[in-house]
Length: 188
Image 1 (tube, rainbow, N blue to C red):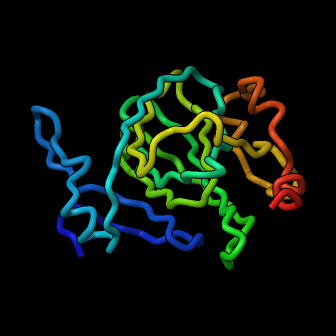
Image 2: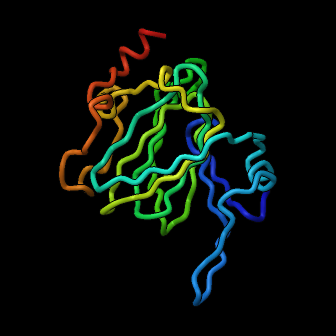
């Protein structure tokens, strides 16, 4: 077990919550957001991260549920400003949690991170006035392999906290027209 992270498994195999040890005083705070040796010690995973992404979105923006059909990406995600409801869906056909989802709040305040393993679809809803979202990925982004699942598919039954935004979410045209869960399953 790492001294720098508290790791909590989720109901989805391989999907982990990481809480860093934060050192704070009257001046502010400090923590290591990533250290390869500590990540491996805390999770038992050895991963090489090849790309860092940073997005900023306004309140009510929903990004996702995204995945890559080829070159699946593992993602270590966190929020540095604001808060989001972060969701991962298991799309690994051979997994005992295939089709299940897990969601949690990630915020600048709670400093939690989520490890989203390769083979999961991922998305988030901004619940604060704005949010800055950072993620490290284990493979590069290939636009020709990027896919989406319909964020509000009834069969997935994701309980998005829409009451926190007081409106319908704002989505890209691609995410609005994403395939259903049934379409995804039938295409595999």
